[in-house]
Image (cartoon, rainbow, N blue to C red; front, top):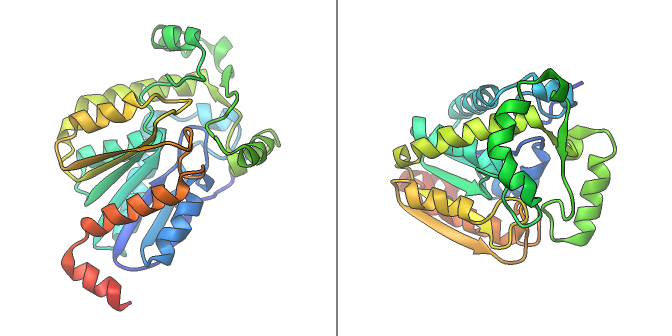
Length: 279
């Protein structure tokens, strides 16, 4: 049964939408959301369709369903804000970029974007076969519930945090830390989303901030270079050196927050900056 972990922290007229990754939960961004809110911002942590339940719940959804969750969340956030920043982690970054390619936003923040699972911890056979094999096996009902299970270090360099997250993933309650594996059907959906986003990156004219672990174990830093090299608006790319894939919760979390806040401040309308300072 799906549990609703969506959260909204009401603040000023500047809104920040935070999007979690594939098989993940809003908890991946809840920590940075609290700090953003403490600085006065309105923050919405969306829960993507099919997530925070079991595998059956997830494989009933497609990437279009996940994207609709984002679009619906932005519309809710627009009702109480005058500026919108969209930010996402891993697959959530692709969804943020997708939205920015189709709608007007004031800025987009890409945390560890994942067009492909090609980091150093991903098996070579997977890197080679996934582009060819996923479209085939995802259509065969026999493989419907087959998953690609995550492995050490699970995107987290901080060892004590990693132990807690792994224990939560294996507890059977996916609403806390997500599923321990990625269904092949869902990975194929990610593959299709990735192609769509890559084809439309040049349409993004909003300012773009990219943050990526230099030694990302799940998605190689080239994933952020793709974004940086193809978006059309002003852009900034920052490498993080003490984290793996999950940069919103790992050792560099404070730097992620600081860089994000600076980016939002730089792209906020002067009138709203004055208003924020008074509240």
